Image (cartoon, rainbow, N blue to C red; front, side):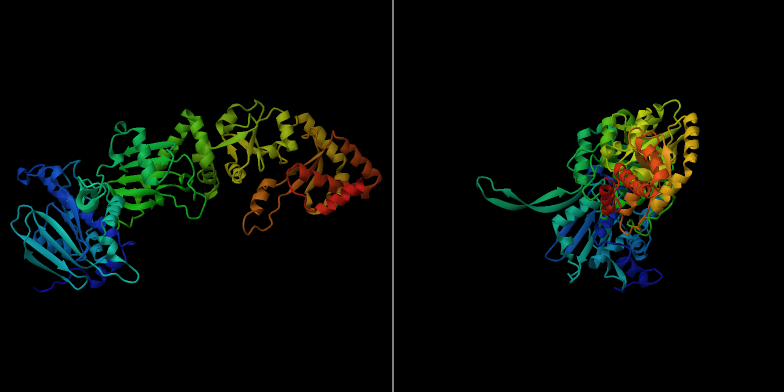
Length: 627
Protein backbone atom coordinates (compact mmCIF):
# COMPACT_ATOMS: atom_id res chain seq x y z
CA UNK A 1 0.00 0.00 0.00
CA UNK A 2 1.31 3.37 -0.94
CA UNK A 3 1.52 5.84 1.93
CA UNK A 4 -0.38 9.07 1.31
CA UNK A 5 0.72 12.44 2.53
CA UNK A 6 -1.57 14.55 4.69
CA UNK A 7 -3.47 17.11 2.67
CA UNK A 8 -2.28 20.06 4.67
CA UNK A 9 0.04 22.90 3.76
CA UNK A 10 3.00 21.22 5.43
CA UNK A 11 4.00 18.47 7.84
CA UNK A 12 4.94 21.21 10.28
CA UNK A 13 1.24 21.95 10.79
CA UNK A 14 0.55 18.42 12.06
CA UNK A 15 3.73 18.47 14.13
CA UNK A 16 2.53 21.70 15.74
CA UNK A 17 -0.88 20.21 16.47
CA UNK A 18 0.62 17.11 18.06
CA UNK A 19 3.15 18.95 20.21
CA UNK A 20 1.96 22.50 20.82
CA UNK A 21 -1.81 22.97 20.87
CA UNK A 22 -2.63 21.03 24.03
CA UNK A 23 -1.10 21.81 27.40
CA UNK A 24 -1.64 18.37 28.91
CA UNK A 25 -1.24 15.04 27.15
CA UNK A 26 -4.21 13.59 29.05
CA UNK A 27 -6.51 15.80 26.95
CA UNK A 28 -6.35 13.22 24.13
CA UNK A 29 -8.89 10.99 25.89
CA UNK A 30 -11.41 13.82 26.19
CA UNK A 31 -11.02 14.59 22.49
CA UNK A 32 -11.46 11.00 21.33
CA UNK A 33 -14.45 10.40 23.60
CA UNK A 34 -16.04 13.63 22.36
CA UNK A 35 -15.54 12.50 18.76
CA UNK A 36 -17.06 9.11 19.62
CA UNK A 37 -20.03 10.87 21.22
CA UNK A 38 -20.52 12.89 18.05
CA UNK A 39 -20.50 9.68 15.97
CA UNK A 40 -23.12 8.12 18.23
CA UNK A 41 -25.18 11.31 18.13
CA UNK A 42 -25.23 11.19 14.32
CA UNK A 43 -26.60 7.65 14.26
CA UNK A 44 -29.08 8.43 17.02
CA UNK A 45 -30.20 11.47 15.04
CA UNK A 46 -30.75 9.20 12.05
CA UNK A 47 -32.68 6.68 14.16
CA UNK A 48 -35.32 9.32 14.85
CA UNK A 49 -36.45 9.19 11.21
CA UNK A 50 -34.99 5.87 9.92
CA UNK A 51 -36.48 2.65 11.33
CA UNK A 52 -33.70 0.58 9.74
CA UNK A 53 -31.28 1.78 12.42
CA UNK A 54 -33.05 -0.58 14.81
CA UNK A 55 -31.33 0.91 17.88
CA UNK A 56 -32.74 2.97 20.69
CA UNK A 57 -30.86 5.44 22.84
CA UNK A 58 -30.05 2.86 25.53
CA UNK A 59 -28.22 0.67 22.99
CA UNK A 60 -25.51 3.25 22.27
CA UNK A 61 -22.26 3.36 24.20
CA UNK A 62 -18.56 4.20 24.08
CA UNK A 63 -16.05 1.64 25.32
CA UNK A 64 -12.44 1.91 26.52
CA UNK A 65 -10.27 -1.20 26.15
CA UNK A 66 -6.79 -0.96 27.70
CA UNK A 67 -4.29 -3.71 26.89
CA UNK A 68 -1.27 -3.27 29.17
CA UNK A 69 0.66 -6.22 27.82
CA UNK A 70 0.65 -4.98 24.23
CA UNK A 71 0.55 -1.26 25.16
CA UNK A 72 -2.68 -0.67 23.23
CA UNK A 73 -5.65 1.49 24.18
CA UNK A 74 -8.84 1.26 22.11
CA UNK A 75 -11.65 3.81 22.11
CA UNK A 76 -14.66 2.18 20.49
CA UNK A 77 -18.15 3.41 19.63
CA UNK A 78 -21.22 2.01 17.87
CA UNK A 79 -22.03 5.26 16.13
CA UNK A 80 -22.48 6.24 12.48
CA UNK A 81 -19.06 5.03 11.30
CA UNK A 82 -17.12 6.22 8.24
CA UNK A 83 -16.65 5.04 4.68
CA UNK A 84 -13.20 4.91 3.05
CA UNK A 85 -13.93 8.27 1.43
CA UNK A 86 -14.95 9.79 4.77
CA UNK A 87 -11.83 8.41 6.44
CA UNK A 88 -9.82 10.04 3.68
CA UNK A 89 -11.64 13.36 3.95
CA UNK A 90 -12.01 13.58 7.74
CA UNK A 91 -8.66 12.17 8.85
CA UNK A 92 -6.48 12.84 5.83
CA UNK A 93 -7.20 16.56 5.86
CA UNK A 94 -6.13 18.31 9.04
CA UNK A 95 -8.81 20.53 10.55
CA UNK A 96 -11.52 18.93 8.41
CA UNK A 97 -14.49 18.31 10.67
CA UNK A 98 -17.16 15.76 9.87
CA UNK A 99 -19.12 17.05 12.85
CA UNK A 100 -19.07 20.60 11.51
CA UNK A 101 -20.29 19.34 8.11
CA UNK A 102 -23.06 17.34 9.78
CA UNK A 103 -24.10 20.38 11.78
CA UNK A 104 -24.16 22.55 8.66
CA UNK A 105 -26.15 20.00 6.65
CA UNK A 106 -28.77 19.70 9.40
CA UNK A 107 -28.88 23.35 10.39
CA UNK A 108 -32.60 23.57 9.71
CA UNK A 109 -33.56 20.52 11.73
CA UNK A 110 -34.52 21.01 15.35
CA UNK A 111 -33.86 18.25 17.84
CA UNK A 112 -33.13 18.80 21.48
CA UNK A 113 -31.76 15.24 21.67
CA UNK A 114 -28.77 15.83 19.41
CA UNK A 115 -25.68 17.71 20.54
CA UNK A 116 -22.64 17.75 18.29
CA UNK A 117 -19.52 18.56 20.30
CA UNK A 118 -16.59 18.66 17.87
CA UNK A 119 -16.53 21.26 15.13
CA UNK A 120 -12.92 21.79 14.12
CA UNK A 121 -11.54 18.31 13.38
CA UNK A 122 -8.26 18.76 15.20
CA UNK A 123 -8.98 16.86 18.40
CA UNK A 124 -8.36 13.46 16.77
CA UNK A 125 -4.70 14.30 16.20
CA UNK A 126 -4.15 14.71 19.93
CA UNK A 127 -3.95 10.89 19.89
CA UNK A 128 -0.42 11.23 18.53
CA UNK A 129 0.68 12.97 21.73
CA UNK A 130 0.58 9.60 23.49
CA UNK A 131 0.85 7.16 20.58
CA UNK A 132 3.57 6.04 18.19
CA UNK A 133 0.95 4.66 15.80
CA UNK A 134 -2.81 5.08 15.41
CA UNK A 135 -5.28 2.84 13.62
CA UNK A 136 -8.89 3.77 12.92
CA UNK A 137 -11.11 0.85 11.95
CA UNK A 138 -14.54 2.03 10.86
CA UNK A 139 -17.66 0.71 9.23
CA UNK A 140 -20.32 3.16 8.09
CA UNK A 141 -23.91 2.39 9.00
CA UNK A 142 -25.64 0.74 6.03
CA UNK A 143 -22.36 -0.27 4.39
CA UNK A 144 -21.06 -3.81 3.93
CA UNK A 145 -17.44 -2.70 3.90
CA UNK A 146 -15.09 -1.71 6.65
CA UNK A 147 -11.87 0.23 6.22
CA UNK A 148 -8.76 1.01 8.23
CA UNK A 149 -6.94 4.32 8.38
CA UNK A 150 -3.42 3.97 9.77
CA UNK A 151 -0.68 6.50 10.49
CA UNK A 152 2.43 6.82 12.61
CA UNK A 153 2.67 10.61 12.77
CA UNK A 154 3.74 13.19 10.23
CA UNK A 155 5.04 10.70 7.66
CA UNK A 156 1.62 10.11 6.13
CA UNK A 157 -1.15 7.52 6.29
CA UNK A 158 -2.68 4.55 4.47
CA UNK A 159 -6.30 3.52 4.00
CA UNK A 160 -7.19 -0.08 3.22
CA UNK A 161 -10.15 -2.49 3.48
CA UNK A 162 -10.52 -4.60 6.64
CA UNK A 163 -13.06 -6.61 8.58
CA UNK A 164 -15.50 -5.20 11.17
CA UNK A 165 -18.69 -6.85 12.27
CA UNK A 166 -20.94 -3.88 13.05
CA UNK A 167 -21.21 -0.17 12.33
CA UNK A 168 -19.05 2.14 14.38
CA UNK A 169 -15.44 3.14 14.88
CA UNK A 170 -12.51 1.70 16.83
CA UNK A 171 -9.60 4.06 17.43
CA UNK A 172 -6.59 1.91 18.34
CA UNK A 173 -3.69 3.71 19.98
CA UNK A 174 -0.28 2.07 20.18
CA UNK A 175 0.88 3.86 23.31
CA UNK A 176 4.34 5.41 23.24
CA UNK A 177 7.22 3.97 25.26
CA UNK A 178 8.08 5.67 28.53
CA UNK A 179 10.74 8.38 28.54
CA UNK A 180 12.70 10.04 31.32
CA UNK A 181 10.20 12.93 31.27
CA UNK A 182 6.90 11.10 30.69
CA UNK A 183 5.46 7.80 31.86
CA UNK A 184 2.89 6.79 29.25
CA UNK A 185 1.91 3.76 31.32
CA UNK A 186 -0.72 5.89 33.06
CA UNK A 187 -2.85 5.82 29.89
CA UNK A 188 -3.14 2.04 30.17
CA UNK A 189 -4.11 2.03 33.84
CA UNK A 190 -7.83 1.49 34.45
CA UNK A 191 -7.92 3.68 37.55
CA UNK A 192 -6.22 6.55 35.75
CA UNK A 193 -8.51 6.21 32.74
CA UNK A 194 -11.54 6.18 35.06
CA UNK A 195 -10.31 9.37 36.72
CA UNK A 196 -9.79 11.11 33.36
CA UNK A 197 -13.28 10.18 32.22
CA UNK A 198 -14.70 11.48 35.49
CA UNK A 199 -12.75 14.72 35.13
CA UNK A 200 -13.37 15.59 31.48
CA UNK A 201 -16.20 13.45 30.11
CA UNK A 202 -18.40 12.68 33.12
CA UNK A 203 -21.42 14.26 31.46
CA UNK A 204 -21.17 12.75 27.98
CA UNK A 205 -24.75 11.60 27.46
CA UNK A 206 -23.92 8.05 26.43
CA UNK A 207 -22.39 5.47 28.79
CA UNK A 208 -18.60 5.18 28.67
CA UNK A 209 -17.80 1.61 29.69
CA UNK A 210 -14.68 -0.32 30.60
CA UNK A 211 -13.88 -3.68 32.13
CA UNK A 212 -12.20 -3.12 35.48
CA UNK A 213 -10.49 -5.74 37.62
CA UNK A 214 -11.99 -5.99 41.09
CA UNK A 215 -11.84 -8.36 44.01
CA UNK A 216 -14.91 -10.06 45.37
CA UNK A 217 -15.45 -12.73 48.03
CA UNK A 218 -15.53 -16.35 46.86
CA UNK A 219 -18.82 -17.98 47.77
CA UNK A 220 -18.56 -20.61 50.50
CA UNK A 221 -14.90 -19.71 51.12
CA UNK A 222 -14.74 -17.29 54.00
CA UNK A 223 -11.88 -14.79 53.87
CA UNK A 224 -10.90 -15.71 50.28
CA UNK A 225 -11.25 -13.37 47.31
CA UNK A 226 -11.01 -13.75 43.55
CA UNK A 227 -10.18 -11.21 40.87
CA UNK A 228 -12.97 -10.70 38.38
CA UNK A 229 -13.67 -8.32 35.51
CA UNK A 230 -16.53 -5.94 36.16
CA UNK A 231 -18.07 -4.00 33.30
CA UNK A 232 -18.39 -0.48 34.72
CA UNK A 233 -20.02 2.65 33.44
CA UNK A 234 -17.47 5.37 34.20
CA UNK A 235 -19.56 8.50 33.66
CA UNK A 236 -22.71 9.79 35.35
CA UNK A 237 -24.15 11.01 32.00
CA UNK A 238 -26.87 13.32 33.32
CA UNK A 239 -25.48 16.68 34.48
CA UNK A 240 -27.18 17.94 37.62
CA UNK A 241 -27.34 21.43 36.14
CA UNK A 242 -29.45 20.28 33.18
CA UNK A 243 -32.21 18.99 35.42
CA UNK A 244 -35.12 21.22 36.41
CA UNK A 245 -34.58 22.96 39.73
CA UNK A 246 -37.87 21.51 40.97
CA UNK A 247 -36.41 18.01 40.55
CA UNK A 248 -33.32 18.65 42.69
CA UNK A 249 -33.30 18.63 46.47
CA UNK A 250 -31.11 20.79 48.70
CA UNK A 251 -29.34 17.60 49.76
CA UNK A 252 -28.45 16.80 46.13
CA UNK A 253 -27.08 20.28 45.55
CA UNK A 254 -24.98 20.07 48.73
CA UNK A 255 -23.71 16.59 47.93
CA UNK A 256 -22.66 17.71 44.44
CA UNK A 257 -20.93 20.81 45.84
CA UNK A 258 -19.03 18.89 48.50
CA UNK A 259 -17.91 16.17 46.12
CA UNK A 260 -16.82 18.40 43.24
CA UNK A 261 -15.34 21.31 45.20
CA UNK A 262 -13.93 19.38 48.16
CA UNK A 263 -15.71 21.30 50.90
CA UNK A 264 -16.93 19.83 54.17
CA UNK A 265 -19.73 22.37 54.76
CA UNK A 266 -22.91 22.99 52.83
CA UNK A 267 -22.84 26.07 50.59
CA UNK A 268 -24.51 29.22 51.89
CA UNK A 269 -26.43 29.66 48.66
CA UNK A 270 -27.01 27.78 45.41
CA UNK A 271 -27.39 29.72 42.14
CA UNK A 272 -28.89 27.51 39.43
CA UNK A 273 -29.93 29.26 36.24
CA UNK A 274 -30.58 28.61 32.58
CA UNK A 275 -30.23 31.48 30.15
CA UNK A 276 -31.28 31.54 26.51
CA UNK A 277 -30.93 34.17 23.84
CA UNK A 278 -27.74 36.00 22.95
CA UNK A 279 -25.88 34.00 25.60
CA UNK A 280 -27.22 30.45 25.95
CA UNK A 281 -25.91 28.44 28.87
CA UNK A 282 -26.66 26.54 32.06
CA UNK A 283 -24.95 27.69 35.23
CA UNK A 284 -24.68 26.03 38.61
CA UNK A 285 -22.84 28.20 41.12
CA UNK A 286 -22.31 28.12 44.86
CA UNK A 287 -21.49 30.73 47.50
CA UNK A 288 -19.36 28.92 50.11
CA UNK A 289 -20.05 29.27 53.81
CA UNK A 290 -16.39 30.00 54.56
CA UNK A 291 -13.24 31.08 52.75
CA UNK A 292 -11.03 28.21 51.50
CA UNK A 293 -7.70 27.79 53.29
CA UNK A 294 -5.73 29.37 50.41
CA UNK A 295 -8.20 32.18 49.67
CA UNK A 296 -5.83 34.98 50.70
CA UNK A 297 -2.71 33.38 49.21
CA UNK A 298 -1.05 33.82 45.84
CA UNK A 299 -1.95 30.23 44.99
CA UNK A 300 -5.70 30.88 45.00
CA UNK A 301 -7.21 30.94 41.51
CA UNK A 302 -10.65 32.29 40.77
CA UNK A 303 -12.79 30.91 37.99
CA UNK A 304 -15.68 28.67 37.05
CA UNK A 305 -15.45 25.29 35.37
CA UNK A 306 -16.37 25.72 31.72
CA UNK A 307 -18.18 22.97 29.84
CA UNK A 308 -19.32 22.71 26.26
CA UNK A 309 -22.24 20.30 25.93
CA UNK A 310 -21.18 18.46 29.07
CA UNK A 311 -17.49 18.22 28.12
CA UNK A 312 -15.03 19.99 30.41
CA UNK A 313 -13.14 22.68 28.49
CA UNK A 314 -11.19 24.27 31.31
CA UNK A 315 -11.06 23.71 35.05
CA UNK A 316 -11.02 27.41 35.98
CA UNK A 317 -12.12 30.01 33.48
CA UNK A 318 -11.12 33.25 35.19
CA UNK A 319 -12.79 35.39 32.52
CA UNK A 320 -16.23 34.34 33.74
CA UNK A 321 -15.90 36.03 37.15
CA UNK A 322 -14.88 39.56 38.12
CA UNK A 323 -12.29 39.69 40.91
CA UNK A 324 -14.79 40.93 43.47
CA UNK A 325 -16.87 37.75 43.00
CA UNK A 326 -13.81 35.50 43.09
CA UNK A 327 -15.29 33.49 45.97
CA UNK A 328 -18.02 31.97 43.77
CA UNK A 329 -17.48 28.35 42.81
CA UNK A 330 -19.32 26.41 40.17
CA UNK A 331 -19.62 25.82 36.45
CA UNK A 332 -21.05 27.06 33.20
CA UNK A 333 -22.13 24.78 30.36
CA UNK A 334 -22.67 26.53 27.04
CA UNK A 335 -23.84 25.00 23.78
CA UNK A 336 -22.44 27.62 21.46
CA UNK A 337 -19.01 28.57 22.73
CA UNK A 338 -16.54 29.72 20.13
CA UNK A 339 -13.58 27.39 20.48
CA UNK A 340 -10.25 27.98 18.87
CA UNK A 341 -8.29 25.22 17.11
CA UNK A 342 -8.77 22.93 20.09
CA UNK A 343 -11.37 22.74 22.80
CA UNK A 344 -8.65 23.69 25.27
CA UNK A 345 -8.07 27.17 23.86
CA UNK A 346 -10.90 29.64 24.13
CA UNK A 347 -11.32 32.65 21.95
CA UNK A 348 -11.85 35.76 24.05
CA UNK A 349 -14.84 36.74 22.00
CA UNK A 350 -18.19 38.42 22.33
CA UNK A 351 -19.96 35.24 23.41
CA UNK A 352 -17.76 34.65 26.44
CA UNK A 353 -18.11 38.29 27.48
CA UNK A 354 -21.89 38.06 27.21
CA UNK A 355 -21.95 35.00 29.46
CA UNK A 356 -19.67 36.69 32.00
CA UNK A 357 -21.85 39.78 32.04
CA UNK A 358 -25.07 37.87 32.69
CA UNK A 359 -23.37 35.74 35.37
CA UNK A 360 -22.18 38.90 37.15
CA UNK A 361 -25.74 40.26 37.18
CA UNK A 362 -27.09 36.96 38.47
CA UNK A 363 -24.59 36.80 41.34
CA UNK A 364 -25.41 40.37 42.39
CA UNK A 365 -29.13 39.60 42.23
CA UNK A 366 -28.72 36.55 44.46
CA UNK A 367 -26.58 38.43 46.98
CA UNK A 368 -29.11 41.26 47.13
CA UNK A 369 -31.88 38.72 47.63
CA UNK A 370 -29.96 37.05 50.45
CA UNK A 371 -29.37 40.43 52.09
CA UNK A 372 -33.07 41.28 52.06
CA UNK A 373 -34.53 37.83 52.90
CA UNK A 374 -31.91 36.12 55.07
CA UNK A 375 -29.93 38.76 56.97
CA UNK A 376 -28.20 36.26 59.27
CA UNK A 377 -26.90 34.23 56.35
CA UNK A 378 -25.78 37.36 54.49
CA UNK A 379 -23.84 38.60 57.51
CA UNK A 380 -22.10 35.22 57.67
CA UNK A 381 -21.23 35.59 53.98
CA UNK A 382 -19.98 39.14 54.56
CA UNK A 383 -17.75 38.06 57.42
CA UNK A 384 -16.10 35.58 55.05
CA UNK A 385 -16.00 37.53 51.79
CA UNK A 386 -16.90 41.16 52.49
CA UNK A 387 -13.35 42.32 51.86
CA UNK A 388 -13.60 41.07 48.27
CA UNK A 389 -16.53 43.40 47.68
CA UNK A 390 -14.66 46.30 49.31
CA UNK A 391 -11.62 45.65 47.13
CA UNK A 392 -13.99 45.60 44.16
CA UNK A 393 -15.11 49.12 45.09
CA UNK A 394 -11.53 50.32 45.51
CA UNK A 395 -9.93 48.64 42.48
CA UNK A 396 -9.99 49.94 38.92
CA UNK A 397 -10.38 53.54 40.10
CA UNK A 398 -13.86 52.88 41.46
CA UNK A 399 -15.24 51.62 38.15
CA UNK A 400 -17.52 49.11 39.91
CA UNK A 401 -18.52 51.11 42.97
CA UNK A 402 -22.12 51.65 41.84
CA UNK A 403 -22.44 47.91 41.24
CA UNK A 404 -21.27 47.01 44.75
CA UNK A 405 -22.14 49.83 47.14
CA UNK A 406 -25.51 48.41 48.19
CA UNK A 407 -23.90 45.07 49.07
CA UNK A 408 -21.49 46.66 51.57
CA UNK A 409 -21.95 46.52 55.33
CA UNK A 410 -20.10 48.11 58.23
CA UNK A 411 -20.41 47.80 61.98
CA UNK A 412 -21.69 51.03 63.50
CA UNK A 413 -22.12 52.83 66.80
CA UNK A 414 -25.75 51.73 66.71
CA UNK A 415 -25.45 48.56 68.85
CA UNK A 416 -22.15 47.74 67.07
CA UNK A 417 -24.09 45.69 64.54
CA UNK A 418 -23.79 45.55 60.76
CA UNK A 419 -25.55 48.31 58.85
CA UNK A 420 -25.85 48.86 55.10
CA UNK A 421 -25.35 52.29 53.62
CA UNK A 422 -29.04 52.44 52.74
CA UNK A 423 -29.99 51.66 56.34
CA UNK A 424 -27.58 54.27 57.69
CA UNK A 425 -28.98 56.93 55.37
CA UNK A 426 -32.57 56.03 56.24
CA UNK A 427 -32.02 56.71 59.95
CA UNK A 428 -29.85 59.83 59.61
CA UNK A 429 -30.88 62.92 61.55
CA UNK A 430 -32.95 65.35 59.52
CA UNK A 431 -30.26 68.06 59.72
CA UNK A 432 -27.38 65.67 58.99
CA UNK A 433 -25.60 66.25 55.69
CA UNK A 434 -22.80 63.67 55.90
CA UNK A 435 -22.24 59.99 56.60
CA UNK A 436 -19.80 59.90 59.49
CA UNK A 437 -17.19 57.20 59.95
CA UNK A 438 -14.08 56.47 61.99
CA UNK A 439 -11.30 54.04 61.23
CA UNK A 440 -9.08 52.05 63.58
CA UNK A 441 -7.69 48.65 64.43
CA UNK A 442 -10.78 47.66 66.43
CA UNK A 443 -14.17 48.92 67.56
CA UNK A 444 -12.81 49.26 71.08
CA UNK A 445 -10.01 51.57 69.96
CA UNK A 446 -12.34 53.65 67.78
CA UNK A 447 -14.68 54.17 70.71
CA UNK A 448 -11.77 55.60 72.75
CA UNK A 449 -11.28 58.42 70.24
CA UNK A 450 -12.30 61.82 71.60
CA UNK A 451 -14.00 62.59 68.28
CA UNK A 452 -16.20 59.51 68.70
CA UNK A 453 -17.42 60.80 72.03
CA UNK A 454 -18.23 64.17 70.48
CA UNK A 455 -20.13 62.72 67.49
CA UNK A 456 -22.17 60.35 69.63
CA UNK A 457 -22.94 63.20 72.04
CA UNK A 458 -24.48 65.07 69.10
CA UNK A 459 -26.60 61.99 68.26
CA UNK A 460 -24.77 61.02 65.07
CA UNK A 461 -24.35 57.35 64.08
CA UNK A 462 -20.77 56.43 63.18
CA UNK A 463 -19.61 53.70 60.81
CA UNK A 464 -16.73 51.75 62.38
CA UNK A 465 -14.11 50.88 59.74
CA UNK A 466 -11.83 48.20 61.17
CA UNK A 467 -10.61 46.31 58.09
CA UNK A 468 -7.53 47.67 56.37
CA UNK A 469 -9.37 48.13 53.06
CA UNK A 470 -12.42 49.89 54.56
CA UNK A 471 -11.33 53.51 54.41
CA UNK A 472 -9.82 53.09 50.94
CA UNK A 473 -13.20 51.79 49.74
CA UNK A 474 -15.09 54.65 51.42
CA UNK A 475 -12.69 57.23 49.96
CA UNK A 476 -13.33 55.69 46.53
CA UNK A 477 -17.11 55.83 47.00
CA UNK A 478 -16.81 59.51 48.03
CA UNK A 479 -20.55 59.69 48.60
CA UNK A 480 -23.60 57.50 48.87
CA UNK A 481 -26.45 58.97 46.89
CA UNK A 482 -26.27 62.65 47.90
CA UNK A 483 -24.40 62.24 51.19
CA UNK A 484 -20.63 62.65 51.44
CA UNK A 485 -18.52 60.40 53.65
CA UNK A 486 -16.70 62.31 56.39
CA UNK A 487 -14.09 60.96 58.79
CA UNK A 488 -14.93 62.26 62.27
CA UNK A 489 -11.17 62.66 62.83
CA UNK A 490 -10.80 65.05 59.91
CA UNK A 491 -10.99 68.81 59.91
CA UNK A 492 -14.04 68.43 57.69
CA UNK A 493 -16.06 66.96 60.57
CA UNK A 494 -17.84 69.90 62.17
CA UNK A 495 -20.68 69.46 64.64
CA UNK A 496 -21.07 73.13 65.64
CA UNK A 497 -23.98 75.40 64.83
CA UNK A 498 -23.39 78.37 62.54
CA UNK A 499 -23.25 80.67 65.55
CA UNK A 500 -20.73 78.43 67.34
CA UNK A 501 -18.59 78.25 64.20
CA UNK A 502 -18.43 82.00 63.88
CA UNK A 503 -17.52 82.46 67.54
CA UNK A 504 -14.78 79.82 67.32
CA UNK A 505 -13.37 81.41 64.16
CA UNK A 506 -13.07 84.78 65.89
CA UNK A 507 -11.48 83.24 68.97
CA UNK A 508 -8.88 81.35 66.93
CA UNK A 509 -8.04 84.53 65.07
CA UNK A 510 -7.42 86.26 68.43
CA UNK A 511 -4.78 83.69 69.36
CA UNK A 512 -3.22 83.30 65.91
CA UNK A 513 0.24 84.31 67.16
CA UNK A 514 0.14 81.81 70.03
CA UNK A 515 -0.89 78.98 67.69
CA UNK A 516 1.85 79.99 65.23
CA UNK A 517 4.41 79.78 68.05
CA UNK A 518 3.19 76.31 69.06
CA UNK A 519 3.26 75.18 65.41
CA UNK A 520 6.89 76.30 65.11
CA UNK A 521 7.75 74.39 68.29
CA UNK A 522 6.31 71.22 66.75
CA UNK A 523 7.96 71.69 63.37
CA UNK A 524 6.54 69.54 60.57
CA UNK A 525 4.61 67.28 62.95
CA UNK A 526 1.43 69.33 62.41
CA UNK A 527 0.13 71.69 59.78
CA UNK A 528 -1.65 73.95 62.25
CA UNK A 529 -2.77 74.44 65.87
CA UNK A 530 -6.22 75.73 66.88
CA UNK A 531 -9.04 75.65 69.41
CA UNK A 532 -12.02 73.36 68.85
CA UNK A 533 -15.49 72.74 70.28
CA UNK A 534 -15.67 69.11 69.06
CA UNK A 535 -14.07 67.68 72.22
CA UNK A 536 -16.25 67.00 75.23
CA UNK A 537 -13.94 65.93 78.09
CA UNK A 538 -10.64 65.34 76.30
CA UNK A 539 -8.05 68.15 76.24
CA UNK A 540 -6.63 67.61 72.73
CA UNK A 541 -6.92 65.60 69.54
CA UNK A 542 -5.30 65.31 66.13
CA UNK A 543 -7.47 66.00 63.09
CA UNK A 544 -6.56 65.01 59.55
CA UNK A 545 -5.74 67.91 57.31
CA UNK A 546 -5.41 66.03 54.03
CA UNK A 547 -6.87 62.97 52.23
CA UNK A 548 -4.69 60.57 54.21
CA UNK A 549 -5.94 59.59 57.66
CA UNK A 550 -3.88 58.20 60.54
CA UNK A 551 -5.28 54.73 59.88
CA UNK A 552 -4.50 54.90 56.16
CA UNK A 553 -0.97 55.95 57.08
CA UNK A 554 -0.69 52.90 59.34
CA UNK A 555 -1.99 50.52 56.65
CA UNK A 556 0.20 51.90 53.87
CA UNK A 557 3.36 51.88 56.00
CA UNK A 558 2.74 48.25 56.97
CA UNK A 559 2.98 47.16 53.33
CA UNK A 560 6.23 45.79 51.87
CA UNK A 561 8.34 48.50 50.29
CA UNK A 562 6.35 51.32 51.88
CA UNK A 563 8.05 54.69 51.45
CA UNK A 564 7.35 56.30 54.82
CA UNK A 565 3.94 57.74 53.99
CA UNK A 566 2.87 60.53 56.39
CA UNK A 567 -0.58 61.87 57.13
CA UNK A 568 -1.00 65.58 57.78
CA UNK A 569 -2.54 66.69 61.09
CA UNK A 570 -3.84 69.71 62.93
CA UNK A 571 -3.45 69.82 66.72
CA UNK A 572 -6.85 70.83 68.13
CA UNK A 573 -7.19 72.00 71.74
CA UNK A 574 -10.45 71.87 73.68
CA UNK A 575 -11.29 75.53 74.27
CA UNK A 576 -13.42 74.62 77.28
CA UNK A 577 -10.73 72.54 78.99
CA UNK A 578 -8.48 74.05 81.74
CA UNK A 579 -5.49 73.36 79.47
CA UNK A 580 -6.67 76.20 77.19
CA UNK A 581 -6.22 78.76 79.96
CA UNK A 582 -2.83 77.27 80.87
CA UNK A 583 -1.34 77.67 77.38
CA UNK A 584 -2.65 81.25 77.17
CA UNK A 585 -0.90 81.99 80.45
CA UNK A 586 2.36 80.36 79.28
CA UNK A 587 2.30 82.31 76.02
CA UNK A 588 2.20 85.55 78.01
CA UNK A 589 4.74 84.54 80.68
CA UNK A 590 6.89 81.54 79.66
CA UNK A 591 7.12 80.82 75.93
CA UNK A 592 9.95 78.32 76.43
CA UNK A 593 7.73 76.26 78.67
CA UNK A 594 4.84 76.63 76.19
CA UNK A 595 7.01 75.03 73.49
CA UNK A 596 7.51 72.01 75.75
CA UNK A 597 3.78 71.94 76.55
CA UNK A 598 3.04 71.88 72.81
CA UNK A 599 5.17 68.74 72.45
CA UNK A 600 3.47 67.14 75.45
CA UNK A 601 0.03 67.91 74.07
CA UNK A 602 1.00 66.54 70.66
CA UNK A 603 2.23 63.29 72.24
CA UNK A 604 -0.92 63.04 74.32
CA UNK A 605 -3.06 63.56 71.23
CA UNK A 606 -1.24 60.72 69.46
CA UNK A 607 -1.80 58.40 72.42
CA UNK A 608 -5.49 59.30 72.66
CA UNK A 609 -5.81 58.73 68.90
CA UNK A 610 -4.37 55.21 69.17
CA UNK A 611 -1.06 56.13 67.52
CA UNK A 612 2.47 55.48 68.72
CA UNK A 613 4.72 58.12 70.24
CA UNK A 614 7.39 59.08 67.72
CA UNK A 615 10.10 59.73 70.36
CA UNK A 616 9.16 57.95 73.63
CA UNK A 617 12.40 59.01 75.38
CA UNK A 618 11.80 62.70 74.69
CA UNK A 619 8.17 62.40 75.76
CA UNK A 620 9.10 60.70 79.05
CA UNK A 621 11.78 63.34 79.76
CA UNK A 622 9.26 66.13 79.14
CA UNK A 623 6.77 64.57 81.59
CA UNK A 624 9.45 64.35 84.27
CA UNK A 625 10.52 67.94 83.65
CA UNK A 626 6.97 69.29 83.79
CA UNK A 627 6.34 67.37 87.02
